[in-house]
Image 1 (cartoon, rainbow, N blue to C red):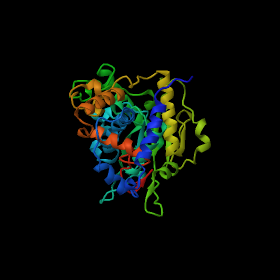
Image 2: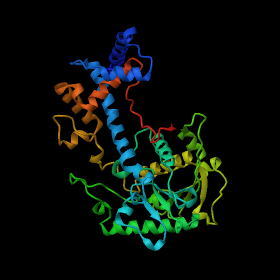
Image 3: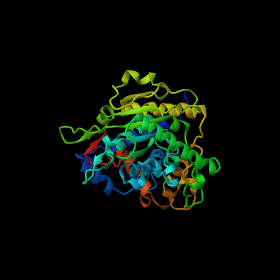
Image 4: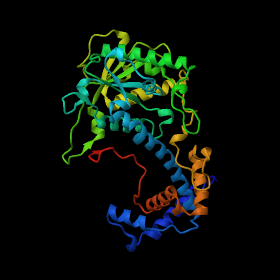
Length: 394
């Protein structure tokens, strides 16, 4: 006899609940009706154990979602779409970088260099703006590659943007040389700090340090954007999926691969490549290829996974970034450990809601309604990362 893990009870409960709600009085014909209805409901307690189990699973999903959403909107977005004060700027080689600049290179598998030709002009005609649609597309593809569960600790992301000024390099060869110099600067600062960048990264209020390191893959690979593709649909919207397939970028090997588990090869993506348009002559050790943005993200994520499994660079998964965690529920204030895992936070939220009310905590308020709506085939406050612009869609 097959063991009962509780799923059959939940399935039976789901069917019973849906039947009980499928009445003409509760039929909602539009998204506005659904929104209005579920916001007007009051949670009756105690809630059934089967519903509580579903809420617990939803809260675990919400824990992951909230951490990623914080990175998306608060940490990564300003660097990609803000001003030069929020990102690295590569101009005159003699200008150098600050220590804060150098930390932006840590915990990334590649750097994303913006040539002048890919930047939009300001009102003076100077090319200084980076199109946010590129970041939004990269973020969505990065999520997809990680099955919506990327490691977001310590500002880990696909890449950090580096805007090249009119005084900066304009060729792949020049960018590679500048990147090598940048990596030397980062490595020197980390070496002086005792092998990690933690000591020159601002500490968390709790005193718990973040963990930063320069990945070997970051030294070995650069990504370069030399133009932007942007096309509206007939309805005026922009599909980020189409941007991912039609926007192309260059991926170039720097020739610094001694610390990798194996040499980098573009053979697996050559069939998906496009002709090189902007490139000076570089040697075979600095191989370069043009591919779609979607292909580039997948290729680099796969390389990072390979290196992580080989354990040849310091992984960051064991160092939890508490600043990304959702707030502790009532009764658990100040308990960082409760917030540091989806299971612990969901359990604590349920215990707190049972005592203080599901409608008295914003997380359980949304969760219990989201679950109940889902049980009757409706969507209320879905856990989905929305595009940063109302005219973009995934």
